[in-house]
Image 1 (cartoon, rainbow, N blue to C red):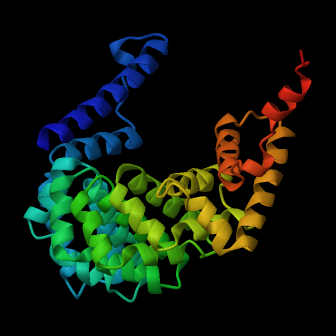
Image 2: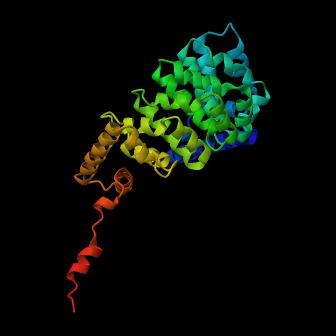
Image 3: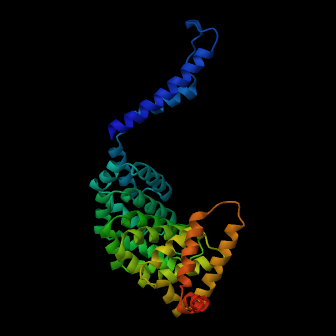
Length: 332
């Protein structure tokens, strides 16, 4: 940690030295008599760099955590300390240190806070802490914080806060089986599926990414989301004129269509109107792609596959070529 900070300082110092040297070499003439004192801007930068070199990141974590716990510190100051925590938590080792020195204690009060700004920052901090970090994922899952994140998604009226909560959930459960099992325990699939209906494009995109990712890697998650109606809700999203990203939504639909061999056909039987509208939207999207200058081969391939699933071949529309061929054979 200290070595990393020093390396950052040395890199900055090197860049500054190169820039200053280039400026000096360009000056004419270059004699000792022309050397001038460092200007105030350069002096301030160098002083700041030297000061940063001596910063101990763990000490800063401790300070930020203590200030956020302090009831005498106002909300604006707490936001600034949270910003700093988000910065430090991007480093894997420091994310672990955060929990070692008692950082878990501040997360529950922040997620329960009546200030949505602080709650959003807490979600961002949580996402940074657990991203690709199974040690921190385990701590957060054991703490039950996922339930608070799901409550935000299900109950908050703030679209930005809901989106931040989904980001944190995504970082917590992607690639982490225990997190996914806890999602199932807390009825999280139903909450996330209902959130797809929120008219917030960024939120919808993040939900599609999350659902597609975990369902692609886990048959159990795919079954869970399918059985809770995710496929129908995604089709409604695609049919909507305000669909945020057609290809992204189609990819997720295609992933869930593999939950059962006849998943799409069952929708045709259960909700003919929804299926008919889906067919129409797929056709319209095909036409839009064909008239576009951009080649969108991946999306076109998805459309072809889904149209095939919607209209499987039957014995009624298969030509009886054998009978015709027999009629064309001359008799002897």
